[in-house]
Length: 262
Image (cartoon, rainbow, N blue to C red; front, top):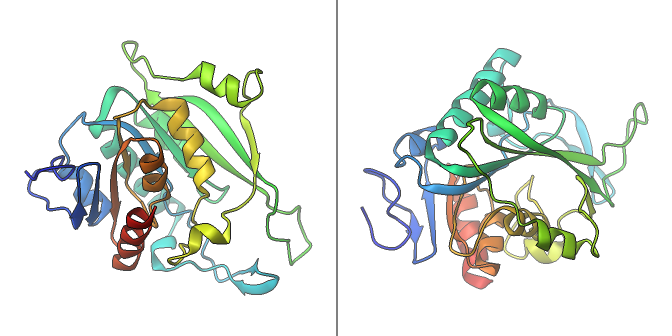
């Protein structure tokens, strides 16, 4: 094992680590299999949406390919669901008994994720709808504009599990009223893409709310598909410990730039 945050895996060396964060340039499945059990307080996962189907999307007012990369492609529905069940099963192993997992997705994958959570003995706490105030327009004009994503929040389906929820803070942040499960806000601003961008990068405010709602200062947070490490940025802001895993060197290097310059 290593010093600092590079101590949560057996026989696996962190690409970069310090006292509060560790980044692993590894296949998600292989890394999770080597992680010590019940070491993580919270997981945020933004897995592949599998929406890369050679279609067209809109970015900056221009028509662009919807394809994100080979990591966003899958052969069949059966393969997609097996993929989701496998990584969710491994996440359950490393999550503490009272820990929780948040998973973001669109219609292309989130229904498989929801089923996989139940099959892998998780209980869904909330179904959050993230409503985007500035979604890209629908160029085909043959359906409603896609302007939302779903974020599922779940805990282990165990009678002894007692998840943490900072209800008073969420109520305070919502003007003294109970916070609802529809969150409204803009897409990731350019200011958060100074060192480069990830095609599915989430805005920092979204991860900040998730962390404040379900973790305490000093907790260990894992992102098994970390991309550009928005989760890590939010962890740095609120003194949480961060573990990020990604198999793409470009995104790990982008993560390092972001975390070092926050």
